[in-house]
Amino acid sequence: MKTEVGIIMGSKSDYETMKNVEQVLKYFGVSFTSQIVSAHRTPDLMFEYAETAKDKGIKIIIAGAGGAAHLPGMIASKTTLPVLGVPIKSKALEGIDSLLSIAQMPYGIPVGTLAIGEAGAKNAALLACQILALNDSDLAVKIETFRKNQTEKVLQDVL
Ligand code: RP5
Image (cartoon, rainbow, N blue to C red):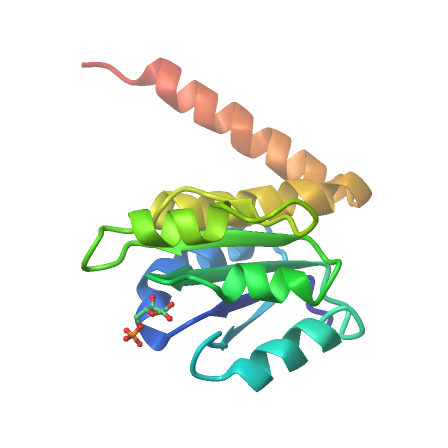
């Protein structure tokens, strides 16, 4: 089966956050694969992943990492596929370190950086869906419906 979104993360400990990416992609029926790829602990695998992703049919990469979160930026340096970065909430600095490591890329190698933690993971998946929906009218309808339902729910909320 084709894989539209490649999900990677620096450690198994990131999965608690990154499983939210999977849940949202499943909801929208977007195919994905998930893998642990560490910038520091498996650097050769990281470069191999980035260099082969396009040929495997992957269209967007979502990379989660925490602390000295070099994975999204280094992956982006080796592919022209869009890379979305999810800063994992770290123990020492609550994810501020992850956020800045992912967001502060130099001109020329962009990483689309989401919010720290669960919201960022879910939004990375939503953003990936919105990008894919540019060439997928069925997916575009699902996203429109999701937005409409979300708005209606908020309007119906009572205090
Ligand atoms: C990063 O170090 C990972 O992305 C993870 O967020 C963090 C801690 O990893 P573990 O020590 O839990 O494996 O590379």
